Image 1 (cartoon, rainbow, N blue to C red):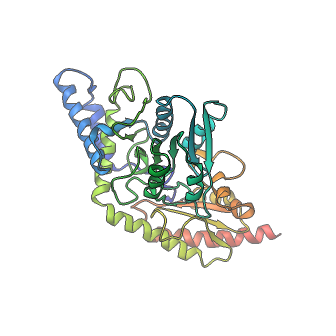
Image 2 (cartoon, rainbow, N blue to C red):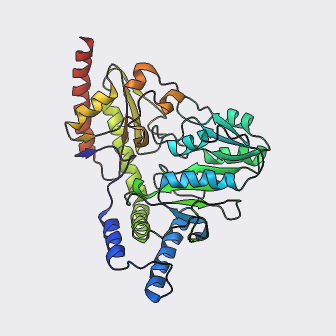
Image 3 (tube, rainbow, N blue to C red):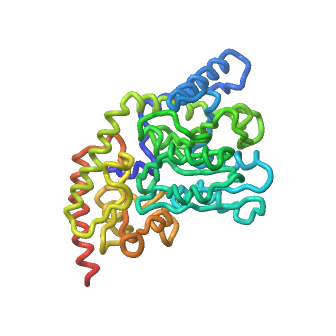
Length: 381
């Protein structure tokens, strides 16, 4: 099986799986307990928290463990707005992941909340002029994703933050970092809230974290036992958190080499397929986007048909976000950048991991060239 759908999920690293098994079978204690075995597990969780904080150059107390990207995004939005009283304006973009976009839509009928959906340019960058116009003193929250999950477009978070400081200094700034964390060089981010999901970097599904800036007015998420500094109640998912720590630490040690390998695969696939007529790049230039995501349209071919034809050759790719793959109709993200009609119908997303190879890329390229040529002949009849 050749797997080019790593933006949907990734294979768990063996070391991460072994860490989870040890935490389930040996160090299975609840870190909330008072006895020494539980205290030892709590120290492991604190170590994981510190590692993630170090990766974002923030304080350990700013890391809140969650069940993944969707919960982190939901918590960021609801937790911020619950802490704000009175009429408020919230801003996001037309190309956000459903776990942000649909949450904003949930406030449509709230008389206290005004929603603004910001347009993007033809490669998926938020239009800063539109953001500037939309910002006001009553802006409570701005949410702009760091790396677009379908296009690979990278947001200039510093440029967005600069506008907020100038036009709406009281607004909270959230970024969905699910496709960016460990896929871009690690640095201190100019955001108040940042969402991360473990299964995008070879950790198990069902675990992630939300970075919450210390001092931010923030209500939090689940209410109950008071775990995660009263911001997210629920029994600590020790196996998944420690496995996520293991996967992230391995990724960090190999960051430069792994980034280079993913970018080589991405560029090779683009160059190979660019030999075909009627192939269009959706999103940023291959050198400027995230190293692991490539979105291409094949004129005269329905993407779903091509996807299943590739599946018969043991190749996995995607037609868009995994969270939207079962929904019919137009692709919201592609529509927002002006990719419409047959070009939208023929769009596939390829997403790479550090373990994909150029040999795999060449095999997939040849398979696509042959299949597209055949399918175009069939369609002309």
